[in-house]
Length: 227
Image 1 (tube, rainbow, N blue to C red):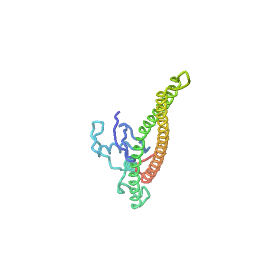
Image 2 (image 1 turned 180 degrees about the horizontal axis):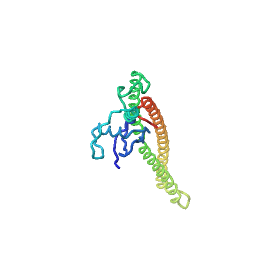
Image 3 (image 1 turned 60 degrees about the horizontal axis):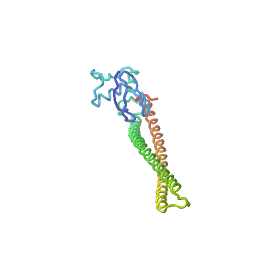
Image 4 (image 1 turned 90 degrees about the vertical axis):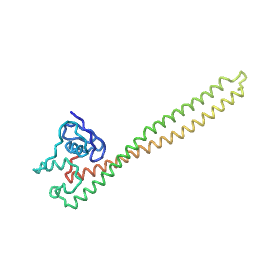
């Protein structure tokens, strides 16, 4: 069994599929693809198949069943590859459907790239959140240390040494500044994470809508099947 690499004709993402299977479902957009068409894509792009055998040219469809399978296995880009009688549309309607498909695919590629870019921001925000948590911990530690120092170095008459008092006061101020700063940053990070996740959800919803439109056009034109 060999694993071949190609690009999904619907979402444009890199995919891997088994050489000895007939169909493959894209893990990114959910489109069901014909492995024979993916192998043809590899040959067209100049990539040799994993098996050391000469690439076979797709035979011309003879029967209606063969013709339908041929259309299902190819990502059609030209109206000349589609029989108007078979799909029940005029040549102009077919061309309009293919034009819309090209526009949806281009928009889908853009949305998928945006989703990847937004997902890449998650680790940075998480790292910033951890930094803020560390800053909060240091601030709390300094505040506790200042209070402990005051309690530890108080003399028997209940009075504090001036130097100790000044040092504890400075530490307390630093701790207060750190705690206020960390609280502001924590709120900012939380808002950014919330907006980021909302944006990713919106982009995913838009991606799903575009995939649905593409699948509808593919089904209408008998280009390739989908779930």
